[in-house]
Amino acid sequence: MMSKKRLLTFIGLFIVTNVCLIFFDQHENVERVSNISDWTTVDLRDMEEVLGQKGMVTGEKHHVYFDQSRGEFSEMLVQDSMEVSTGDPLYTYNVSDYTQESNRLNQEVARLTDEINSIEMLITQLENYPIEETSYDTSVFIEDDEVSVDISHVENIETEFQKVQFIMEMEHEVSIRQANLDSVEAQLSELESTGETVTVTSPYDGIVHSVSAELDDPLITILNREWYVEAALSESEQKQVEEGMEVRMNGEENGEVSHVSPVASELDLNKPSQYTMNVQFEDEGELIPGEKVHFDVILEKSEATSVIREEHLVGESGLWAMTDTGKLHYLDVSTGIQMEHWLEVEDIPEGTHISTSPKERFHDGTEVTTRLNLSEVSWFELLDVAKREPVIKGMLFR
Image 1 (cartoon, rainbow, N blue to C red):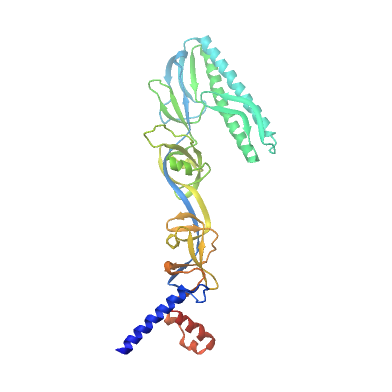
Image 2 (cartoon, rainbow, N blue to C red):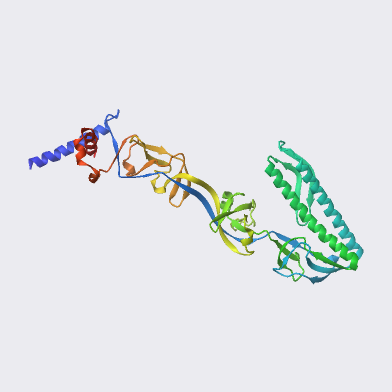
């Protein structure tokens, strides 16, 4: 009985002595260790943050009108879903005043000719534009029912790519006006030939989207064959998405955000704001107008970046890392993309050993010990004095 009491007393004194040594050890003369039961390593993975969206395949809409003051509508020559090309007849009408209509068409020919000449002059100036300058002034302003182009002050054309891109945009404007000019000239020629009938032809290539049986405006709407996907963004999503971001559909990164509206499509205080987003895809031939599709906008991506499991993070930005010298250090890290259960950690090299359990018993700067697996101990090696000492020391630490 006395021996049992002595044993308990000895154990109690041993525990109290060790606690006091640690508590009063201001100069850290008592060696501490961190016993680690679980650890892992920093891996490399491709990480990305995506925004899943759904939208509808559509095209740029072009409207064709009929002014009933010009005469009496005669015949509709197209119907819904019909494919049309530039110059195809759309509808005919009989003029009510030959002289008035002839003057109007001649004025339209003159206006379109002037606009084409003005844009072509601007293109010539831009082709000779020196990239090293930071501003360029011109005085052309063009506006009609279909397109409004303000090029009165072109700023910050800083690269050859921007210069070529702007020239391509202006050449597109020329092609639109040239198609309209061809259509008006054909109408004028027919009027002069028949004296009363005018056939309005299509200035666009595309598919007839709608025809107004009541002759309301727009009389005909034509969808451009350059299909794109239109989607709606919430207010928070609109702040995340930028033009030029890559888009993945059907497992392939084959699209790009071409437009994000800065203004809500409908201003209503009682409804959540929605913003229009357009996505252009490389292979437009696989898109079907009116088709509903799902796609991902890639907001951010990192290739072959350092990652850890999310649950291994300490607090909001900490890690327990083991050094090659067997020390445990607390690291404050910067985190990045979170994907599934993985978290990107910046400036931590691949293969870094991370202690994961028990986190609450780790101490910064202490030596690391792990579980002793007796099955892996070669007892014959204990006969070697050089190997015996660290093994016995490790057993005593436990």
